Amino acid sequence: MQNETLSNRTMAGYASAEAGITAVETMAQIYLLDFYVSVVGLKPSLFGIAMLIAILWDAISDPIMGYISDKTGFSNGRRRPYILAGGFLLGLGAYFLFSPPELASQFSKFLYLVATYFLVNTFMTVIAVPHISLGGEISFTGGERNRIFGWRLFFANLGLLSGLLLPAIWSSRENSSFASRSLSSVTIAVILIFVSLLSYVSTKGKDKPNIREKTKESSATENFLDFFRSVRSILKNRYFLPLLMAFIIATAARTLNSSIGLLYYKERLLLEDSQVVVRILLPFALFLTISIPFWIYLARKFGKKWPAFWGSLLLGVMTVFLYPILPQGSYEAPLFASFFGGIFAGSILLFDSLVADVVDYDELLTGQKREGAYFGFWKMATKVVRAIGFAFLGFLLEEIGYKTGAGAQEPELGWRLALLFGPIVGTFFILGAIVFSRMGLTPEVHSRIQTLLLKKRNIRETRRSGVSAG
Image (cartoon, rainbow, N blue to C red; front, side, top):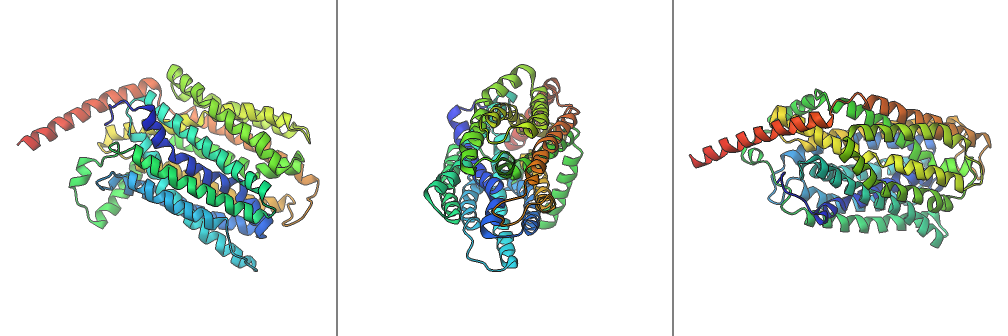
């Protein structure tokens, strides 16, 4: 399976589920805080605590889900069944998240958010971890992996556009913010269910359990111990840890950036929400999308490491210096920032592709294919950061003067948001790039790893054939 050349049709079909997954994530990241604070009327500090509880559980469940999908032995694959079931459940959860009943007390609003976001995050894990793990194992060559994760980023951007635009479209049709968010969640749920089915069908025959995993029966205790041995092995991987730490730092920046983006444009630049989506955030997603072939080309020519480094570093430098000085009332200057921000942000596809390369090194050492465990940790780390970031942000907004339910905020709030959105976010991106530069998995090192891995696989297959013949 690893040596097959995949068609663009297969890659696109596999990656299509990312559109639905990202649409739900985007709607939650961009609109959830504003929806529950401004429309539902929940205090920002309680919103932050609710996010912390729900997302921390989600983070813990990611490596568990990765381990489960590594060990699954269904006849139709070890990843694909979860993609199909997870798509339906996540769509259902997204609808209830943005359609709360009328609740009177702060406690009831808090409790409803915790419960629904807990379920949304659980269902997100069920689909997202097996899906990204499948992308790491359906190809063996570095160039093809870049294309696979390039397709994932392409569909992620379609999901980003859906998560951004659908609420804006429904807002223009509905007078009620509550109704527009609810209808948006229904539309996204339908999209998610469709693309999950498409991904399931497109990857038929590409998702096969390991033979050794099919023939071995383990007790619950043995599986429990095996899980922790897997965790220990991952934490000892010398190539994975600097990559993971860099991504954690960058995720902190992205969480802060996406969560306060609308508030920054509204309170600092004095722009309208609907116009911000159409004239700034939409172009950003488009610029990010058209940058994908550019980053794949750079990775093919120079390897993945240094293009990814420069993309993150330049994004950080631009963010530090540009966003605090953008003029109020102008859409042209933020559009300029969106162009370069979108281009630099496209380098993120190389980070995901590098995780698949790191798994090759793990397989060389252990003889096990554990994409699920690695990508589970990858997802877990980002969600822990998001949980802490959301909790911290809720208290931080109150601290810098944001008033819940106020028709107008204090003028000083805009400048404080500019400092968060610019220098603080940008510094995180720069720090992440510096940490990432310590990652030693160069193209030459990875080529040697794959050569040795192929030899080891051939020896294993020869022994297995001999046992079968005997």
